[in-house]
Length: 118
Image 1 (cartoon, rainbow, N blue to C red):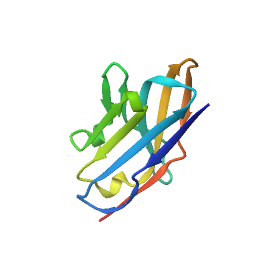
Image 2 (cartoon, one colour):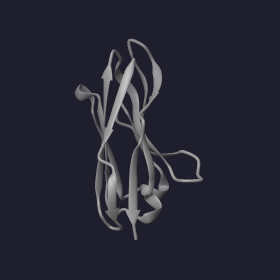
Image 3 (cartoon, rainbow, N blue to C red):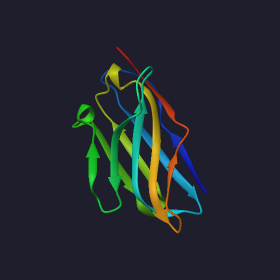
Image 4 (cartoon, rainbow, N blue to C red):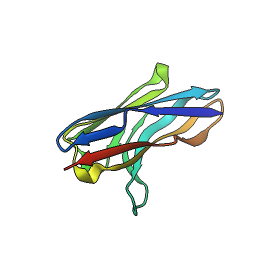
């Protein structure tokens, strides 16, 4: 089993910054992909950013040049630095990890709320 502990959400004014963290614990390690998704009220869950174990990084067009994803493989932790936040970034942010050893899977965190006021 895998537990994902997310932290770092909150309320911030437009133009501000937040840093999200997601630490994976349990009996599975070496995840192939670690990333973040978000879901705004009334919208589908969408990919924000992802990073593979080999270093390939993918961003949603709406967050490029503002958000930075990074991962600490020995700590099984993924981070999302969010700068110049906009009201449209508001939503619940979910950590997602895929793959892993010794048992591959697809795991989700419980989500952390990010609210950006104008």
